[in-house]
Image (cartoon, rainbow, N blue to C red; front, side, top):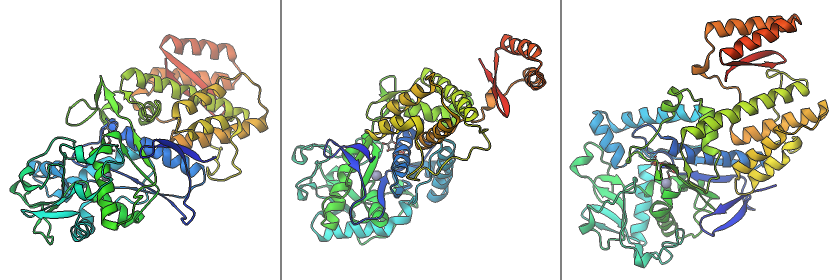
Length: 475
Ligand code: AMP
Ligand code: ZN
C-alpha cells in the first residue's frame, strides 16, 4: 500500500510513488541552522521527516534523503564572532551536537548532508543564471531576485505576489529590511549580500564582489546539486512555507527554466509552548539534554513528539512526556508477553528486514494502514494499543507473525524499546530484593517470591518478569 500524504501545493492527499523514469525517491529537507543546540521543536519536524522516510522504506521505495546544514547566515556569523572562533569551527561544534542528538532520538542519517559553505560555487552559479535570464539584478554589490519577473510567485502559500508588502530575508523570520533602499522593490529578496563589516572574515569572491549568499539560495543550489532539477518531495516546518520555500521555488524554476521544482510539499505544524511557537528567539525552548537531565529517555521524547498528528500544532507539556513514558512502558510489557508467546527472548529475536515484501504484519496491518493515511501516527499508535489490549488467545505461530509485525511498525515509527534510563537505576537495596526474588522464583519458592514482590512494591518498585530475566521499574 503506498503512503498517502497531504501536499501543501495542491492541498490534496496524494500517494507517494516513484516517477516512471526514476529509480529513487528524492526527498529534500531544510536542515538546522547550526549556531546553538537544536530544540525539541526543531526535532519535531526532523523526527516527522524521519518517520516519513521510514514509512516510504517500509513501503519498499528506495529513498535518497538530503538534509542540509545551514552554516552561513546572520546567526551563525554573529555566533562565531561572539565566540571568537572561525565560522567553520563554530558550526562544526554545533553540527556534531546536532548529530549526537539525532542519533539519540533514533533519526536515520540522511544519505547526503550538504553544507551551505561547501556549496558557495553552486550558489554563485545559480545566481549568475538568474542574472543572465533577467530574474535578478545587481545593486551596491548585492544581487536581488526580481519577484515581478516570476508571474506564478506565491503559488505554494497562495499569496498574491503583486500584493506582497515586504520580504523578510532572515532565517528566523524576523523583518530585515536593512537593505531596503538598494532593492528596486520591497518585495525583492537577496540572493547575494555584499560584504559588510559585521560579517568579519566571512566573505567569498563572486562576479559581483566579495560577500556571502542569501539564505534561500542555499537550498535551491544544494537540492539541484544532489537531487537534480526536479525531485519528489520537499519538507520543512510550516514556518518555512513563506517566504523560504516560496523563494526556493521562484529561484529554482527561474534559474533552470523548468517548472515543478518539487513534486510534493510536506510541512509539519509547530511544537508550541503555551500558545507560542517554541523558538530560540522567544527563549521558550527545551533541548534534549534538558529533558534527559530531568530523567526522560530520548525515546520518550521522540514518542511525545510524534504522538500528535503532524498537521496539528502540538503543545509541549511534561504531562505529555509522562504519558509517553507510560505508553512505552505498556509497549514494553506487551512486547515481552508477545516474545514469550512466540518462544523468543529479547536477545534471540532477529527482526525481519522491513522492506521484504513477504514480511508479516500479523495483527499490525491496521496500524500500518493508518500510517499510510497521511502519516497518521496517532491512529497507528491507537491500532497498536488495541492489539496490545486485546484478550484474544494467539497460537505460537500467530505470535511469531505478530512479533514481526510489531518490530516492523516500531521500526517505521523509529521507536526502540527497552532503552536504559539512568535516573531510574534501582538503588542497591531494591536491586538486592530483585535479585533475591528472581532466585526464589527460579527455585520455585513462590511464597518467598511473592513476599519479596510485596516488599519491592512497598518501596515503590515493580518487578517485570521476562523469560530470560527481569526489569525493575519505578511505580
Ligand atoms: P532552523 O534550525 O531554525 O533552521 O529550523 C530547522 C527546522 O525546524 C525547520 O524545518 C523549521 O521549520 C523547524 N522548526 C523551527 N521551530 C519549530 C517548532 N517550534 N516546531 C516544529 N518545527 C520547528
Ligand atoms: Zn531550505
